[in-house]
Image: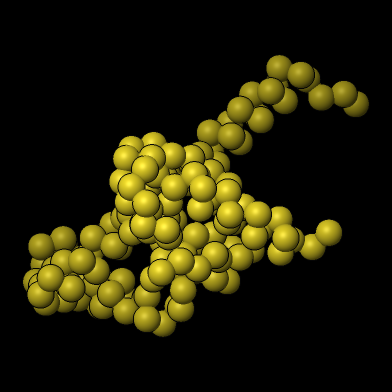
Length: 146
């Protein structure tokens, strides 16, 4: 049996759109959790934050404490070390293999890895310049099994 080329193309296009939507959803979740943690770090109590965001106090507690329990996670997408192939460490920031592959400079900002002000790929918690992204991709290639 041969697959219908038109239907196969539609399925592949839908798969691409689905993967992109998942990436956007993961970034939005990471940004949301980061914002909740920033509210808490700025002095908001977990109960105040919960009430303002229509969340349970326990859910806010989970979001705030997740960083301490999970260990290092990507500063761009929020995935933990167990959810990615590798994490490259910078000064108080991390980037995973997936984000390093997608990283391409955009708006001007300060790179969280080298400190240069240049075009950067920005996540909710960090920024990376093209030069540092290249290094991260090289680390990935060197660390990947051959």
